[in-house]
Length: 138
Length: 138
DNA sequence: GCCATTTATAAGAATGATTACGATTTACAT
DNA sequence: ATGTAAATCGTAATCATTCTTATAAATGGC
Image (tube, rainbow over the protein chains, first blue to last red):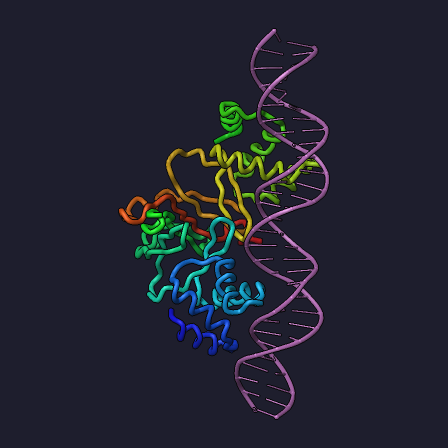
């Protein structure tokens, strides 16, 4: 996923292009890590001093729904990162301090038989948490 | 985990026995599924009309710290269930409607090499979500 | 059993993240 | 250029959770 693809999806789905939306996607494209709504708000308000929290949350949710962003949650806050460009399903190793990630190629669902006719599986979550090199160095 | 073990741990760690705490553990022992703080509050207030939300949250957190309860989160609410009696590490298949679970015996961390000297792994989460038979029948 | 100490609880206020709302502005198709 | 639907602002509301302070209850030693 990159900025132009994201803006194309936005257009295709009938949503409007705004500079704020472009800046928001650009931020995620630059950072390539999980950011909280608060992180995004602070960053965006540098360029747009009066920007509403509502706009941040609305757009984060929109981008998640459009699968431009991936969502997770830790320490009581939702976090978002740009969807990975790799098309195949994968999981992440996540630094809980800075939000940087590394891909985990395999998925436990591939080889673990889970669920049956009784229990209808609709989703799963596999995340490995830790601390990245940079954060440990601090 | 069962009620008497839980109360023994409580005593051993120097915490006091109260009827509310016994009732709380008993609830989880009966239900054997994930309950939200709200679920617990509603149940407990039947027996103790003026019971404070703070007491619920304090005890849920205490029991989690004592590893009497396991914690997870979905739809913006923390959820708790009695720790499984099996001693070995495992994961769950979870019905997001009623909180009932089924154990998944294997753990993806066993066979997936993840992390390295750079990235220090501190934890992981593997949960499979879906809808149980009873909830589908509704 | 009685008292002292320590912990638990109640009641309500405070916090922090997120969502909702009415008014205004903007993007964009025609 | 104009009309319309969508986006945004500013602020209030909501929801889960935590904090605070005063009171009450549980435990251990006498």
